Length: 386
Ligand code: COS
Image 1 (cartoon, rainbow, N blue to C red):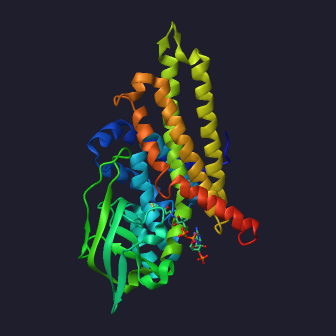
Image 2: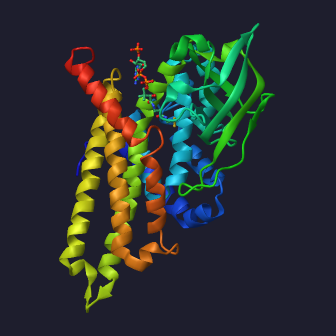
Image 3: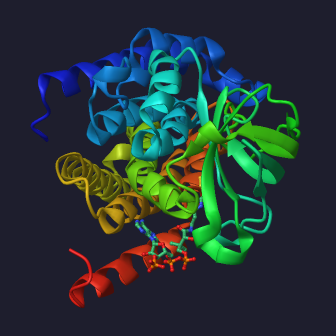
């Protein structure tokens, strides 16, 4: 299919594809097995300017858009979903600064994120605040020209590896979600430590850790936007980043489908390649159709967001919801087509299936995406939204 990509977009896609195929594919099984953070690959992605995509030119970036990030994510995820989320989480951590940061904050933090010298991460989730993001208990109480941060963030991607953290905390609990604020916290700040590295079903090369704040003093100049804007900043950040998770799911599905297709042509049973059996053909046809539909949705949502950056919650949630659901279906079917071989860790298919599962969970479960879509559509039909 021709998605009318620009020359720059084709270049970004091809660059990401080359790194994915040449550098990530050969080591992905080992990264998964060892649960090792992919620093060598992060450096390759940085050298190819892939962290610059989501940063404006004024801060050392390429000023490209969400579609460009999605193209890179799809290619990286085709090789390894764990590497892909380590890459995308730097964008996630940078989005609050891009959306609400002051000129000084942008100048201080974005050039290092764009060059890939420093990774960013986003700290919203807590033990008691997952789907209900408004339930956060971490506090950042004003004390002179500082905030004193106390609390624990859970399951933070790039935890421990990133240098720059955008953290949502309550500066005024009495105001509910209007008392939440976003702060920039640098690794190495006294009172900021990390929990153990979590052991996960999939995306094992990525790092997932707690962020622990104990009387951690953050200068007031690290407040992003205004006090009380933290929940909005978090929601708008997720609106911007969810298509990227859709693209991660898309790449995972495409990778699994290609493995299953290749296998079905080579695997001979009853004297014929199994690709000649209609049972297998129909599975492949359904897989390819779902993948193409997900790609068409993600690309058009991303392009829409790049040109109409206003109210995009509904479409952004649709892209993540649809792609992650089909990724789960496609990867399960890929394992099924490959039978016992698909179940063995010697082949990449079971890893695709394990990696796919998280895309239905993080950056908002798919149940939450359905809420966002439905409530957004109802609001629009009542004339309150677009
Ligand atoms: N853009 C702009 N404003 C938004 C918004 C968005 N995307 N989402 C919510 N808001 C606003 C609402 O308009 C509302 O404002 P008013 O009070 O002025 O009307 C306010 O924020 C509260 O919104 P809402 O009432 O919908 O909040 P809820 O507490 O019901 O929660 C959900 C909303 C469930 C959508 C939110 O908690 C969520 O996204 N949860 C999932 C979090 C998530 O993705 N976690 C993953 C961890 S990060 S990797």
